[in-house]
Length: 85
Image (cartoon, helix red, strand yellow):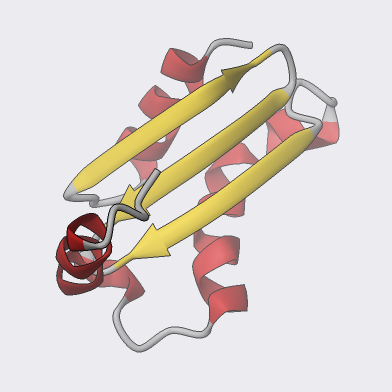
């Protein structure tokens, strides 16, 4: 599994302002930025990311997935403090 494959799946399924994927083999980190996360709980945000990747998680192509989600305003604030990725 390559980060580009995960990126394509998420970009196709979700409306995101920014998306950063890194990792290799079956361990990945996703940083997703979009208005769709506004007002949602952490669990709901993670479910949004998991849904398009469910098949890959089920077949163990993705074994470990770290997810960080931000609204655009949260992302700008996090970048100022050097925290985003």
